[in-house]
Length: 206
Image (cartoon, rainbow, N blue to C red; front, side, top):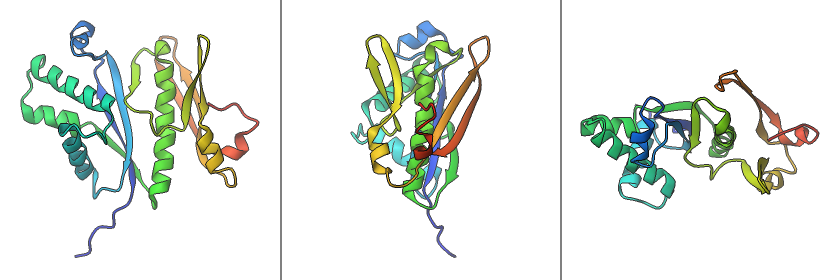
């Protein structure tokens, strides 16, 4: 029997806490929001990746950023103390049942490129939380193609210089994001156009 060829893939973890009481969540440093984590991996499959992620978090490994480890720890306490869920259900909710796998790619470089653009999308939504009916919190933006720039009281997003420099001699596919909102503040639609960044020089981009 032939061994499966392992292909890099991009995935998203989503933790929806919007239905829980705000004051109860605050006891665990949590918010009434949808928490998002986006990653890429070369693991055999998504379950194998989740098991490795779980192992590193439980070992308090520095390879997983503190924000994520702290969030998972707080959420686990919330599930145990407030919802009184059994350990096996908590384990499943924290690491396995909340994952969406987007797509497989031929190279890890391509997977990371797409990972970066998807993170950028959620970083944008995170930055306009005050406009959203359901708050979006991105757990890690380390691999985003965007960075926050502060100018007085104004905060804006721009493409990181390293992405422009790295691909200055060849086009790289990046998101051109257009977010539309309903009157109640919820997101109506997000247009996600892949275009070469070098061709966007005269367009408004995030």
